[in-house]
Length: 198
Image (cartoon, rainbow, N blue to C red; front, top):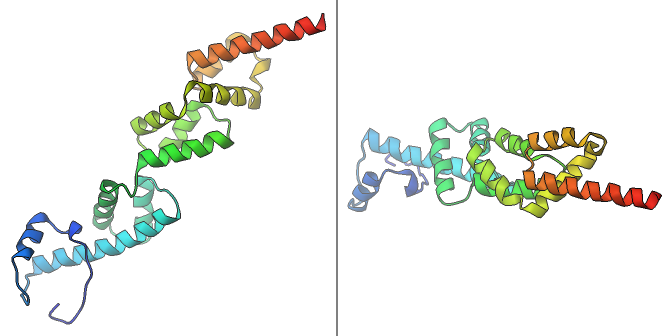
């Protein structure tokens, strides 16, 4: 700059018109206040991007979570929006990937119902369609049945009547096929137990 200050920026944060005009410009050149404002915007975006990359390097982020964390670190709304949009475009941050990884981890540790898993993803700022698609992909029949058995054991559902148990499991988001298979296996175990008693 004419005042001797230096700046770093990425052209992705400049408008296309600006980039195409700059390509035809020879230095040195005097710049208007509008041009200087656009250059400074791109500089601040680059600083916000570096902060965002640091967050993403530490842990997978949701789009809403990354936006919130950048704002908490003092980055302005316009810069945050530009940076997160760019990072989403290049795949550095992805709600779909976050949901998939989070579900994989959660399913291996917890005995939550599908409705609880969906609500937890929504609470992290992931839209309903993305959360539902990730849950559907994660819960193939065998995985869902295993989750249902863990959930039933954790909540002692075997002591309920069959009707109450079915209603509870369906209300919690388990599929009819998984509930039916679980009930069939439960009846089979009870029948074997009665035969052993005889």
